[in-house]
Image (cartoon, rainbow, N blue to C red; front, side):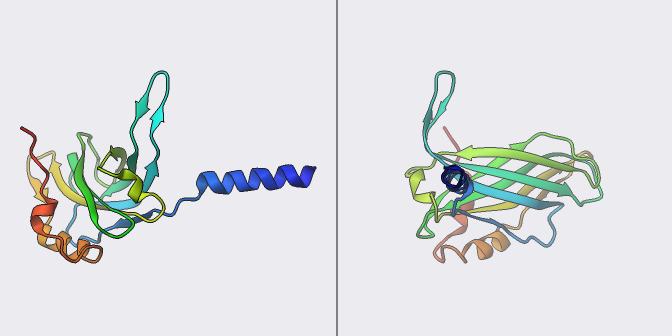
Length: 169
C-alpha cells in the first residue's frame, strides 16, 4: 500500500512538473541587460470564481543590468513558435522598473495567440532584449537584423515585418 501511494505521488509530481516546451534566450552582443533565466510554458484555459484566462503561454524572465548605467524601463521581445516551428505570435513585455547598476529584475508576461494549444509540449518560446531606457534619457534598441537571423533558425521564412509589434487602432 505504501509503495502504491509513493508511486502515485511520484507520477503526479512528474506529470505536474514535466512539460516539453523549449525556452531559448537569444545571444545579443551589445545588449545592456543579460537575460539570466527564461521559461515559456503552456497554460490551459482556467475558469474560476474570481479569475479566469483562456489557453495562454506564460513567459517568465529574469535579467541583470550589465550596462554600467541605471535602467528605468525595458522591453523584452517574446516570440512563440508552435510544435512545427511556425510563428504563432510576437510581442514585447514592458517593465517600467528601475534596475540599479549590476542589479537584477524579473517579470512575467502572458500571451494568448490563436491556437495556443499548439505550443503545448513541443512549442518554443524565445526571449531577447528589445529596448532599454536609461536614467539619463538615452535609449538602446535591439538590432532587429541580428535578432531576425537568430529567429530564422526556427522559421527560415521569417521576415523583419514579423518582428514589428502590431499597432492597435
